Image (cartoon, rainbow, N blue to C red; front, side, top):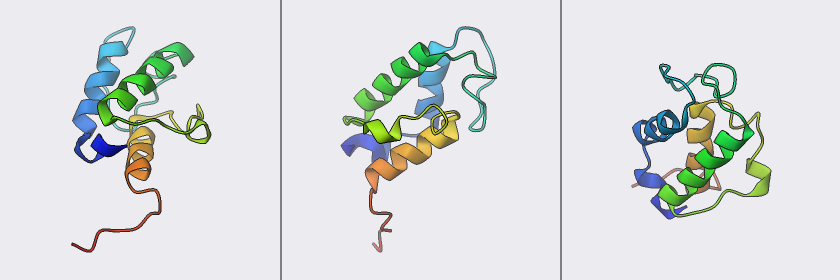
Length: 91
């Protein structure tokens, strides 16, 4: 995902809020399903929006309901997509 370096937590929360079925406060550890009213279709819509923003695509292995249950977990996935080998930049 080439644009994931510029993808921020704030942008993710904005995308989540735009899809929520009811108003609620979104935090990084808010549970998308239990707290924010997401179902599998809303999650799919969110994933597509994130992929479009990041100009990339998640692998099927990455797309588990458990692994995408909070904004924090989704940001971790985006970060792994940006740095798949876990290498750290020394620059």
